Length: 216
Ligand code: HEC
Image (cartoon, rainbow, N blue to C red; front, side, top):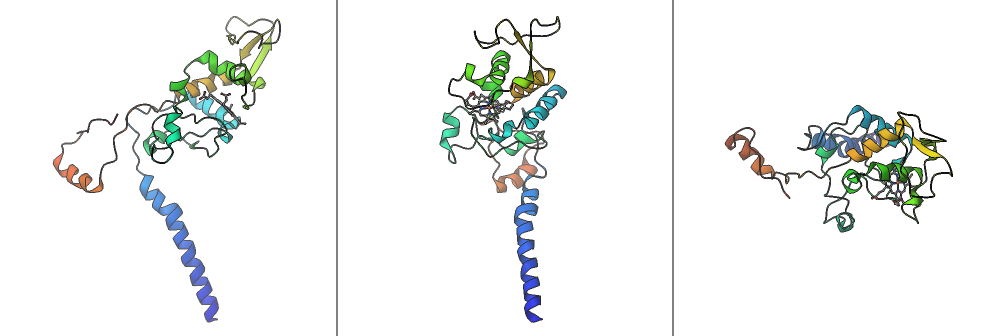
């Protein structure tokens, strides 16, 4: 009997430690994160594009979390942008941080590659732009037609990529997906983290709305 009590108490203590470390502490750390100054809520078209990003499994090859210089120097050398901060993700539900980097990080793809034509063409056939690319092509995001209707747009592809005599027309969901990619810009400056002691001092000393100069 004594052993059973010890076993049960031990199991409960282990469970409590795990819940504190993995649920309660992270909740306390991030539950009241404010949007970083500069981050914008997504438009409805961008949200539809985001849903398409999820549905097409882009996240299985692309992360959205450039890391800090000290942690991963290669991230900024690759031009993926500054290290992200929790406030960059306040409008991301569910978050799409990703853990695989078969392709580049995309949190700042809107800065790196703003061209709609490039994005559409690359989704239609990545190898038309990056010869050795192992990214899958997404032909079902487009219609192949003899001629575009009046209100439709044609993807400007490099010569020889579209089927002979046909035009490639993006579906509405594809246009939304590209709007979402163009909106992935977290290149506004972020404030350096406030030292804990200074925070208390600041609330009594500094007037409301006082902000430090942004870090560059
Ligand atoms: C099997 C893995 C894989 C999947 C799935 C995948 N990609 Fe990629 N992606 C890559 C690789 C590898 C590259 C780098 C080569 C290239 O540019 O094509 C890349 C490049 C890109 C780039 C250009 C990045 C840059 O910095 O130039 C964009 C944009 C992109 N992918 C978007 C998407 C979107 C949107 C989806 C989902 C519809 C997707 N990818 C799905 C592997 C993948």
